Image 1: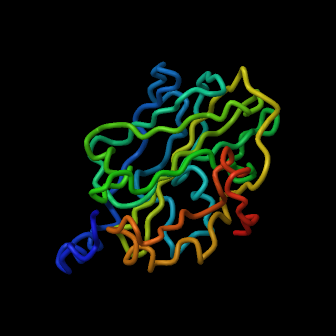
Image 2: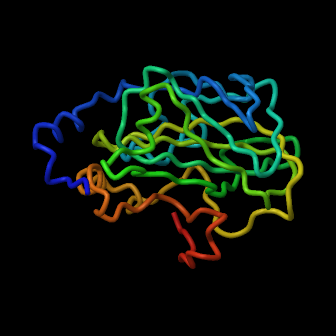
Length: 240
């Protein structure tokens, strides 16, 4: 099994030396096999990180720097797979990919007032220590599935990439507006809003050093548990 002891000090230093200007945005959204391009994607002022562990309280943590709503939404059916293709030049490889879903209130889709459910989280996915995020460097999408129990309505789906290869850690969120149909009675349980987002304990910088290269180091995803797994995990309520 892959072991962090096989990583040289030089490699670790190189990974943590990536500049904060290395970045990306969602360039294509595919839902249930239908390509919506960037039409439902919230547009941002720049493609840098929305926040780092030094400034977790800012409003950009919801959907990205200066994010503005799109003029149209994408249609989706509960149970559909959503694929997010980020910039083809995505430079980061170490860190989780986390997806949230939050229902808009009436005609308002204010990302800073929405309660988000976590619907997916992926970390190290292979025995060689490869993180899910590394798919993006090859131009491949990352994905999440809309829970079948999701109630019909207008939602923001929020895909978050966390770069653990930087100190302070960088968070890259992207939101898209989607209209969900064919769903159930609704999601329930723990939610999170952005800001305040994650607590200091969730994103402490030591995570980057202790877990970035190791499958068995006990990496803990930030935020609440995944909505579809709550009955199995019996995790304590999240308080960020």
